[in-house]
Length: 292
Ligand code: PDD
Image 1 (cartoon, protein in one colour):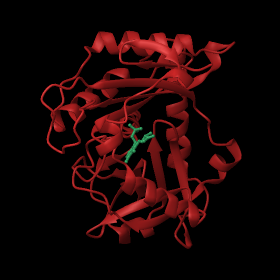
Image 2: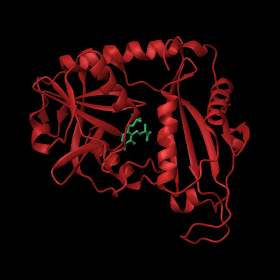
Image 3: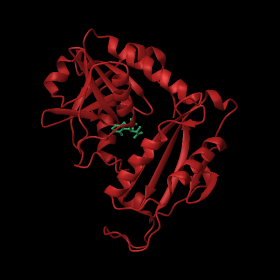
Image 4: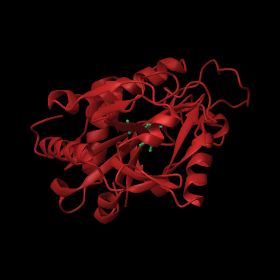
């Protein structure tokens, strides 16, 4: 059985309960993180907890736990949910903090509610290698989300509708466009290669500052792959040599078809090949305890 952490206790998923008056349930009033763990070791925990802090600050909620408490809870949770061969398993930790339970439904902040803290794990189902090697299709859609996309809020209705629209169009992701600029995917960050230079939009309230995005930029800089942070117009995206989507659970996904056209040669490109090898090497270093 899968064990979850809820408000100070580890318990079986089937037994975990929250009140219908929880503000996460009624208002989507909360924030979350998704953190991969390879061989039981948390990947980029520091940056994820820093982003959690930034999200909590943005919604004016006090972090209920100190960094070391978070680490202990998440590591315990991974151990409690480990299978027969923990060294080879890839898990993702999902955690969320909501503004807690208030007995009256009122938009304004309650005066004395304690935050609700939930953490659970699930296996990372990696995309089948053939699909990854072939690349995937994405479609472009108008970005209908709010103006605080840098906050990792649990309020994901726009993202849910956008992703489903992509799925209905037989695509794996929607690339979101606002004012002529492509910002990110419904649940991923966006990269393109133009004249051999790797480009991703700069951090702003229009997109989530992805942990995978930052790692890809670091790996590019350390390994001499030309890169820069710059706006990507929809027109430029349509001319791109390569397009990638990045996230903690999907890693670096090559997009080989955008709307009705193929991207570049229609196959994952040479820069993607190189970056994927660097990323996999980094993951293995984390798995072996040589990196964090
Ligand atoms: N989503 N942009 C959005 C809107 C996202 O929801 C995500 C991740 C990312 C990539 O961020 P990171 O590299 O830190 O995973 C970008 C997670 C995985 C989710 O909602 O499940």
